[in-house]
Figure 1: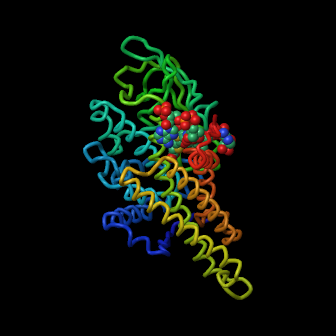
Figure 2 (figure 1 turned 60 degrees about the vertical axis):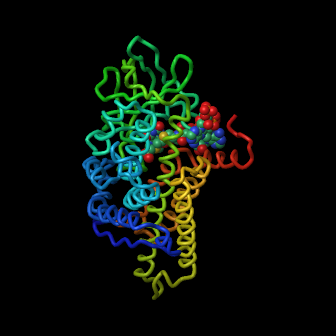
Figure 3 (figure 1 turned 120 degrees about the vertical axis):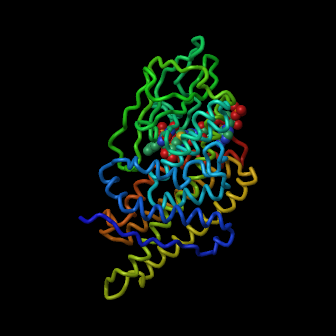
Length: 395
Ligand code: TGC
Ligand code: FAD
């Protein structure tokens, strides 16, 4: 079977949402789009097939400004606004959700907490190197027994003079086996959650890889295991305590995913539209049948609604007014929308849709993870339910 080499992707903007964007947004988008066509498309099916992470792309992602696009330049970021950040995530996920994950974790889950909650020494030590891709980071919140409910975490620190002793385990951690450092959330002796920067090579710290994923196969995932790991107190993030620390990072990453998922949806729609025009059955193109048109018309309608949703969310985020619940709504809606579109697009491709000559099955499998990580589909529904009713379904 030949592996897809050609990338005929064309962007779709049915409601001329581009008119709402600024020149900087369009320039950033074009640069990332060009990079995805040149660096991601030719290799991604092969890496996904082999369940291998294209780690050489970390440095290239840094070079195109994908790490912390909306963080200040002096702290390793891109100095752009939140819409530019979203648009970059959209183009990356058009290539592959795993590639967007590489950037989400580095920028929103590693650089952001160090920027927002770190000491000046920590920022100077880590942020420029993270922004340039000379250091790779990961984010440890989820545990084997505590996924949707991180408040129950068992990972803990114990005071030991000028250091803390860290024990516990984190599960499902994107990039952990290749990371130089981990931002880890753990409870202290008072039960308060603190963030720590734990460097690779610290005795007692290991990062075994998780194998056997049918989803996000081009992204590397592992555990974080801490056995009496001595972490100097200077490695604790001094300016945050409690769950709002990790949740603030998740707001950033979930926002990026709300944009990113549209990229995967667009790639599936674009491929299905082209295939339906080129493939003939019963003497006419598939696109000429009403049932195919229904699928395509519903796809572009949902994509258009999602594009408008994130544009508005981005304008709110630029003013610092995007609430966590608004971000939850957009993450949930857009990932589900993308997954539904991937499934419909797969049908339009018929048998060819299950092969790696087209991107749809890969996107579809990836989106199963995206539906679950950064808060599952149902958890985000309950966050919206809590917001609109005032009643907390979690307690
Ligand atoms: P709750 O009692 O509601 O809140 C505890 C404290 O946290 C504050 N808070 C937030 N702060 C900022 N942003 C948010 N979104 C916040 N949500 C809550 C809250 O104000 C409170 O602060 P304080 O000062 O009063 O203590 O918390 P809860 O324990 O009842 O949790 C509610 C729930 C279920 C919504 C939450 O646990 C949740 O979101 N669960 C989902 C877990 C999740 O999203 N995990 C993601 C792991 S990381 C990941 O998946 C990375 S994938 C990376 C990739 O490859 O792209
Ligand atoms: P569970 O919490 O056990 O949930 C199982 C099911 O129960 C879900 O459908 C859920 O919606 C449902 N459920 C749970 N509670 C309720 C409730 N109160 N009401 C109704 N339904 C409920 N985590 C990190 O910290 N860092 C990472 O870098 C990271 N990367 C990941 C990469 C991949 C490939 C994957 C798959 C996950 C990653 N995660 C990461 C973990 C991810 O955030 C969790 O998988 C997710 O939060 C769900 O937790 P869980 O898998 O333990 O599912």
